[in-house]
Length: 223
Figure 1 (cartoon, helix red, strand yellow):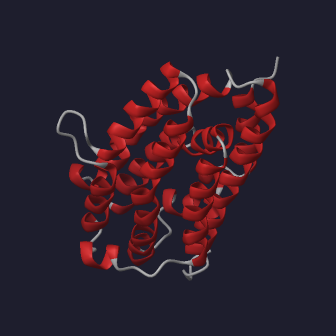
Figure 2: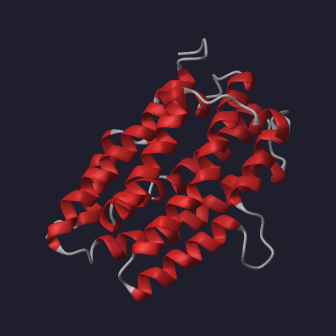
């Protein structure tokens, strides 16, 4: 039987972040550092907003075990457990490692596509439990592979090996394996009547992520 998560996987594959020309150029070392800095300034605002999407899905999760797992995900995002840093701070460390200042990152005017990504996540996470869960999964299922590719590209192509700068990606290499596994289990327990909405939301979120990268790419001379 085809599972809800596998249906979302097929939708995500059509617009997977790692297949976007912008990420391919990064992996191959063809992006100027100024472009990476622009990307870092833009993406921070999504990273900062993301825990609110997790929180919204958690708040409407009807499954007690599911709520516990989502709460653990949220605690990790917010840096609540074990004295760990929240993920927005880890992203700032990455941006600063590229030569940005926190003020420049926080004060960045958002591309239309960046705002659309934030708005799409907010909308889907509040639309319904099924839609929010589908959106979370479409994002977190991609990120371990993305994180590994980013680390490799930064080290091999840009000579950036400082662990503080790489920590956001190091954390997400492993954390989002667990997070996406949690979402996959919850998706596959959805009532039949809710599964199509979860798949549609996953597809919509994958499109918003792709468009975000296109927005950054459109503002660089490298194609």
